[in-house]
Image (cartoon, rainbow, N blue to C red):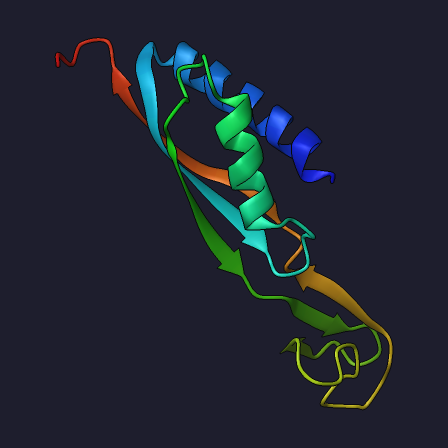
Length: 119
């Protein structure tokens, strides 16, 4: 399960950015995952719950946004979404397409409570 190593790196980045901002705790993390990124949301959530214990990200809510896959035909340049014939260009029927969107996996934003806020 590669989600474990992905989540470890994700958590390191989140904690570092939150500490840099002098945050008291992390409340929400907004992640973007491409359709073909090969990342399973439930696995990331499970790993995050375990790994974030005893960190300022413990209890943070993970929100996921999905980016659909998009392709560009290398023969005619036409761009198109994924469909039934995944890599077949609907314009020229060519089989030489490249993925131009849908492989993404990144932190869009981190919501924190800073030190100046009181409980």
